Amino acid sequence: MTTVETTSASQLRAGDADRDHAAAVLGQALASGHLTMAEFEDRTHRALVAQTLGELAALSADLPTAPPPPARPRPDRAARARLGLRIHLAAYLFFVTMAVGIWAVTSAAFGASYFWPVWPALGGGIGLLSHALPVRFGCRSSGRAALSSCGRR
Image (tube, rainbow, N blue to C red; front, top):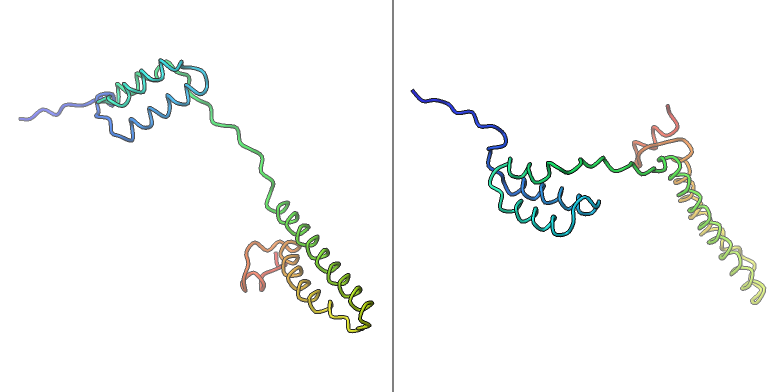
């Protein structure tokens, strides 16, 4: 009859990923000032030659566990969309102002009266409108499906 031996977790063989994780933990301890460079080098060397998970656990047993990094505040999606729309509007107004200015100078110099900036302004206006509608009505995606559901809640 064969006896089944139970192996504790500390006696399990360590793999490369386990060794890499232990070295990363030691690197964080060095960066936070919990280890000196000499201690870090010694423990990292021991981590790279460790055979069991118990050996790896012993290398960081006296180190405090690192708290999770604080969450960085991120502007919400609607605020970013409104900012993008304001930038688009500013670029559109600059473009239209430049086109009308060029028209004014050339019509004054050459006596032309056809107001050609209306065409680029209309084209740019269509692009601005297609940007503004989803921002205004809260559509979440682009494409034909969004156009049919835009504004419906």
